[in-house]
Image (cartoon, rainbow, N blue to C red; front, side, top):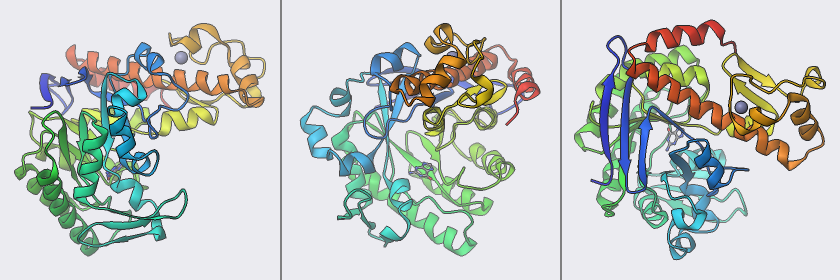
Length: 369
Ligand code: GUN
Ligand code: ZN
């Protein structure tokens, strides 16, 4: 087994659980938020800084690394861990989601997807076998099956055909996957249709993957609909394996996801908005670039003990962002990632202490969007 999931504690009132995942590159506690490092770097952060804030696993992207610098080059460098000097765990997404985001630049058949590079327009083909080959060359600890993220909204008939194909693709990925030191996760699709989510989960579970992701959510649907899908889908997945909700990373969705029994999350949101001058706190978002902070000499979040909040004021960070100084992006990114890593830690502790619902109530009392 490349990875093992250890279930440590289940909340007696909700689906929430605290666990631990063992990988060839170390152990991390769940629930966890995975910072996104699309191009083999978490934008603006060094590996040492990520470690200092407690990140145990990061995510990278097959699609981007396949196009640039190429998976063969990464393999030649000794694999992704060595190439980017990150010795903790890595998960790579399969490229399915990124390719499907290209819109008119791609064409889907049973065999795979033909697409044009967003960089130079060159023509490429990704299939379950190719995506698996690329991910084996990159060498992440956890790799993802090649799937189609059903768009929102989608007709039932389209969602059914797409979801059935994703399951056939998952089986092909499993056949193509031969690295014993990597875990291949299946991805549940099904759009916003419970019958299709049931079918997808059942078929993937019968293929016996070491972990399961829930895809096709947070794609523009209202949040209550996403929660309904989670409440329906998570109980269909095995208790003794990790569950990963793809593309979710705002505090409210992380909290509700954990309540339904999700263990792993990733999202570009915290790092992307940080570079636009938006920071996260347990009271909601703060646009630190705004004029109201020009003479505000308090830290972003007085309760936060990240490097940024221990040393710098809102006024100073605003000044850096206004003058487009690179250090400003580093400070806001540091805070947002520290905030989410710490938020998950506190949530986990509340599960261990049997006070998850109290934690949730307190969160909602202070949080505004
Ligand atoms: N990232 C966010 N959603 C998805 C999804 O449905 N599939 C994949 N592969 N990645 C995602
Ligand atoms: Zn901070």
